[in-house]
Image (tube, rainbow, N blue to C red; front, side):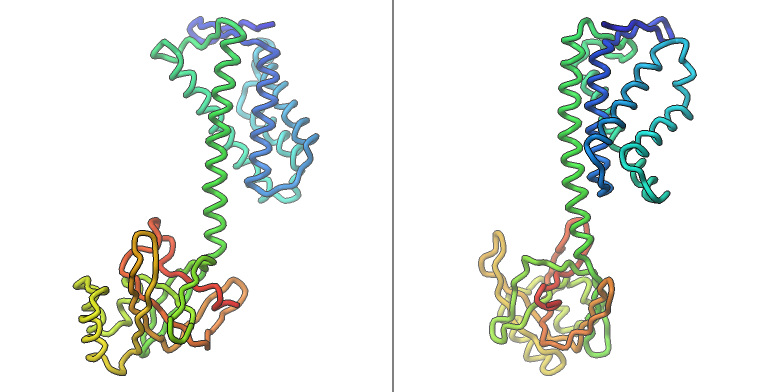
Length: 310
């Protein structure tokens, strides 16, 4: 069964009611399930299904001329609020805002993807005549659109989860040397196993630019002239600096660099500002100077050895 209705300009819109109902239940369920994951909300499958069904029935109602008022913004917003309430039963207003924001964000991804697929596969350049010749054509557009939307949402989840995990492991640290201080944002890197080879002390890796203000002029010259791997230059600078700063040479391996060397130094003290406490490190810790970017998005400029925090 299909419903034929007219929009402005006399354009006919062919809608197969049974397919629209099933398609909207599926899409609404996926959107609500995505909202559940994004907002980390607990909900049962039956609540999600009932909410999806109500949203789908509303879509059918607005195709009948006698119920044209149901297409108003207030009614649409009310249906969205009802769906969120049935699906998640939010206890606080701020949680409700988070849920309905995620709901609309995911909905826009689906809508944009399906319209984009229609535009690409439609032979006409314009999207003014939205019609389907038969149920098979309608299903084809829906399957492709829903499939791509699910893939997009998957990668949005993946990015969101990776970003959240990264942010959970970011902390501020202060490195003090000769009455000077450098403030960094460090990633607590569980993959960082770098240690000073002689003492086996853990190593914090920090970008040169973030440490520049506390380093002696002789040491800065090495990085300005890009000679941080020149052992002869490093030896000469170590002799010139003397006891002003205790330098260490730390060999390391990385992708594409099997024999790298980092210049490290022993700071006077290091303070780590954790979420629930401020930790002043008393252990022997070495800070290695890295003359490049540690993060492409510049979200952090240091790597904190996990052993330092126990």
